[in-house]
Image (cartoon, rainbow, N blue to C red):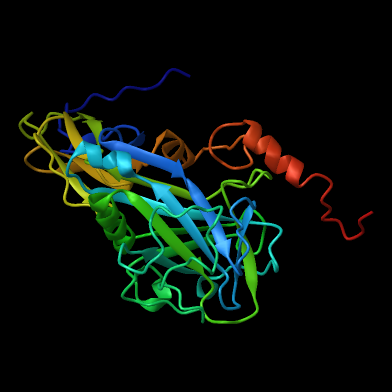
Length: 360
C-alpha cells in the first residue's frame, strides 16, 4: 500500500571531516641514461695449466689443482678520454659452460677473484691470450695456487673483500656468478685512471680436485662469455612524480600537499625533492634499485597519504624484467630481452639433451 507519512520536525546535520583521498600515481620502471653506460665482453680470456697456450678454447678450466686459473681482460681505455669521473653500478659476470676437466657445482667457496696490478714482474696488462701460459705468467702467481697480495687486488668475499658474489644455478650449465660491490668499483676506477686495461684472475681457492668451466668469448654454444657492466660518470633517471587528491572541503577547504621519500637503495643518498609541495614535481635518481615516495594531503585537520614505487634499472631490459607482470619470451634463452642467434646457439648446444627418467 502507499507509504504513510508522519508530520514532525525537520532535522539538518553535517558529517564529520574526512581525510583527503590521495593518489600518488602509478608505479614506474625507468633506467639510467647519461654518462657512459658500459656493457662489454672481454677482449682476451684464457686459462693457464701448463705451457700450452689455451687462448682459443671456448671455456676456462678453473680447477683446484695448482696452476689452473683463468685470466680475463677488458679494454676500458676509451673511458679515459671522457675526463675524470667515477665508476658506479659495476658488475662482473661469468657463465658456467661445458668441456672442462670437471664440471662440479659452483659455490662461493670454490670461486676466487683477483684484480691484476701493474707492477714490475707481473703479467703485463697487454698480455696476449694466444701465448699466455705458466711460462710467461708473472710473479703474481707463484704456482702453488696462492697469490702474492702485493701484486693483486683481493676481490674474493671469503677473503674479506667488500664485494657480493651472487651465484644462480651454480650446478647447471648456463649458471652464472656475478660480482658487485665497492671493492670491484674501486679496482676498476684505479685501472681506468691508469690506462683502462683491466685484467681479472679467476681461481679455485685451495688445491682441491674440484673444478668447473667458465665460458670465454670464443664459446660457440651460446653461453655468454665474461661480461662487465658499469656506469662511468653520473648516469641518472629523471622521474616525474605526479599525484592527485579529492577532499570534502572540510574543515576550511584548504589543503596542502607534500612529497617525501620513504625508502631508497642502500647505496643511494637522500633524494632531493624540489619543490616538494606541488602535486607534480621531478626527482633525479642515480642508483639502481627500488625507491618509494609518499604524497600527503593535509586539510589542516586530517592527512591522507598514498605511495608510489619507482624502480631504476641499469638499462631498459633490467627495468622491464623488474616489473611484477613481466613475462619473458620463452625463446629468450639468455634473458637479454632479445630473441636472436645467441638464443638459437644455446638451443643447439642442448639439442637432444634428455631429462627423462629413461633416455634413449
